[in-house]
Image 1 (cartoon, rainbow, N blue to C red):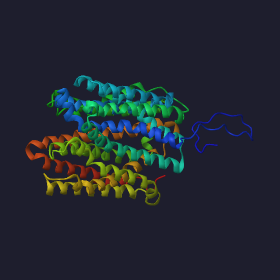
Image 2 (image 1 turned 180 degrees about the horizontal axis):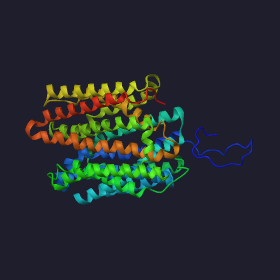
Image 3 (image 1 turned 180 degrees about the vertical axis):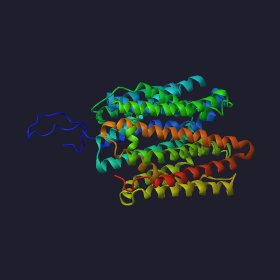
Image 4 (image 1 turned 30 degrees about the vertical axis):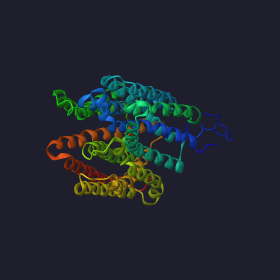
Length: 482
């Protein structure tokens, strides 16, 4: 008998009749497979950062189109994530995972073969939509096919994958651009996804069990439309406004955002009161674990997204690192994040929410140490000088993110695993995009007057403010973590 009950099947009501066997639990190879699929969208949000200068030279894109290469992926990804989670609940998470993998491989190929900048932007938007089909199925599958200690370990590994993949994206991007494999240059950062997606697809056919909500419902059309309007009116002007020279639309869209967000909340509440299933059930936010966990994930993601973007630009434009050196400078962060995420389950079982508080303080210390290094050693800052501060950052982040994901998922019913996972990843993705838009725009706006060093230090100190917010919000988390 499996230790996880994915979906029960009615049996005859006799006293001795045992329940029919549950669907297979997720095996170790199955877990590796879904985590491999999860890593692809996360890597691709960041892998393009170190390739942007090369893309600009090759396609003559210009600042506005380069911003769209990044923002087009992020906005499509964030807007469709919850829809992807709901579709997985309806038609089967394994099926959507397979479709998402195939679509991600095809759109990655389109990005790698793009003949001009506008084609690349269109392919990146499609790639973001494919990622939104793929990623919610990973957490929903873990939630539906594991329990107890196995679930805690799986969620911690997912959190470690999320953080490490984000940093590895820039490391891998630097390696691929520098290697210039067969003269592909920047195109390799997209083409590398094709064989990886193919391998994950073949493995998933054999190792990932099918699960779905026992009571599937239709997609909430009005809620989906309003959520899309809210996210687009928030993210598009922030990510594109500066590069486009702050045209009229970039000032008008943010005015629409609060009205669209309020209308979304009203429509979702009415749908739930009427007995329908809204896109994001408001009842989910009545769970303390969901509400408090998302409140910390958002500022954490803002800081993380902003940091990765700003550091990629500063190392190349300020310290004149090449793509390879800029990527490798983040390697200590990747390694430390991964090992800290593995230690998380044991630590949280003993210390509860204090692990998140401690991780936030360590992260803040790493940011301050990095700012001090740039302040005193600029412009001769070797990667070795940053290694200790980067590792400190990785430890802090590795103790925070996986545990936050575990907290949000801890009380979600299996029937809402897809929509709950979609809402959580949407919060995370929107935060990453906001970080690039806000901290990135702050850094770029200060460059002409202050220079790279001082603009970078101010951006790092702004991220320290988001860490301080996390410290305060961590006291609202449950004392113990299941």
